[in-house]
Image (tube, helix red, strand yellow):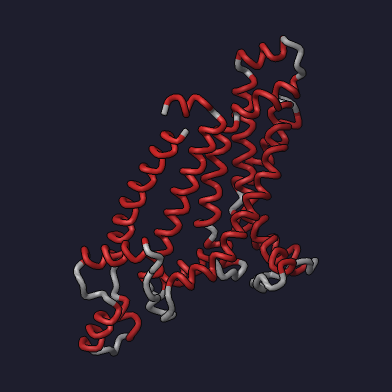
Length: 314
């Protein structure tokens, strides 16, 4: 197990180095100059050059990359061009919105998808199965931002059970969770639909294996064979989807955060792009890439815990 974990950690480190180079290069080739944007059209070349020097934009690409990457290793993400505060402080403030939102949505999607997928697999070919598959197909097809606006219209405008947007902070946990409920439901619907379909397919494939028929022949009921044997072996593709979903929910909630006016990481990236705050965009994208790779690493470890063959192969 330790050898397997070490090999995956080494792969994670290499992926991070490659990702940092790609992110820095992509941000650098984007047209437009942050200093010119900040000073406006009437700025003199001398003023623009002085601001570029102040922001550290006049150095070579290699020195700027090494300074940025080295700073991230020590927790120094640089100073925001727009807000004039450390990027780490901005990330810390916004993370307490995006991370609970992603976990909330992932918990909802998992709680919905597991029983739905189990029922659909257990009743394959019945009206229940067809109904569940039709509902999940609709959940995948409906855009989450459209569903979010529908939730606002029904539960915020008409019923007045929830607020239409904004975030009150964690001083009142009940109000904070209530403010995140509608965004979490909007994010969870398509993810639950995808996860339920994957769960159904994996279980159906597993239930057709010889060892399941052997277990049934020994006297186990279909439910016992499913929960004791099939479910664990069907978890590998399901864990993959859960890991990818968490990464998507953390990094890809920019539209939902803008619909509900949530001060999260997605909205901060959007503001950084529109304001040409490149250091914010670079650091945030790199952090999100790190989160995605870390989740993938944890999923690989979960694979090894579920499937001993991976440990032996490593």
